Image (cartoon, rainbow, N blue to C red):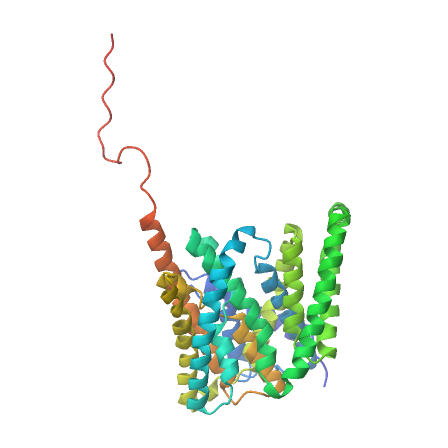
Length: 400
């Protein structure tokens, strides 16, 4: 079968523009990724069938996009933020509590719907999305010890869920997946040590200035070489390229990502490969099965509201409820689960679509919780110094 041509690629990029178009509508506030997924659903298997997700060239480009998306997610984990270190113990305890509640809910959902995916559901509901939540925290200007704690909690849950997902999605292959994950972790540790040594010796700074002066984009090229090499190791050891991308992102975050590299990664990921991946994922989902089997809609709602309930357990430790609900934001892990399940034929028909529905519910509740947290923070700020706006001007001092 011949691969897709330039005309099809142009069509896919045009379809991907639906995401930014919907995000530009102020009242909707739909995340770009959701618009891209929806576009893929409309033009893929579920809808008009214009784009073929099974095309080998399309699948290869989508896998590159998947690796890059997870790479960028890894770079968003604030590994170098020393202020987070003091918040880690309490954040870790909350993450464990959330995981315990999610495990119970996962068993309930799995038995209720007969899917046998209790562990996968537990990981989904316990997960958070640093790439989704941290920019929102910055945009809302949320500050304070509680915000620092939830930031650490989100980073811990995000990293742990991405590592655990390949192990629980197919229990029979868990030992092999664990060995593959260890191989990726070992490669990441070696890369970290090499890059840190080069950074301390001044090689990275010299490479940065040389690349910038000559416009060679060497840092981007080296990052792509490392990413594709780790992806090759992941495929050879029978684990997901998701781990390869995320592990390399953590390494770059720990070393310190140059702003120039961040802009370049943003350009190639958000400009082409990322939208292409999400359009491909949407095209591969069969959402019609949700309508044909209403129980799948209930499963999606159970996963979404179950995630909110599990994270709301943080309130038992004194965490403000809006921040507890805010930490339920998830996207990368459900996307990865739907991708892996579709590729490896591990999911029941429509189950991937149900997981994406659950992710949409967490995004909606996170938006509301973020707004409430910002409003609460604004109410607690001290009023500005000086006379009130309608106060009469002060009388002039008497002259001698």
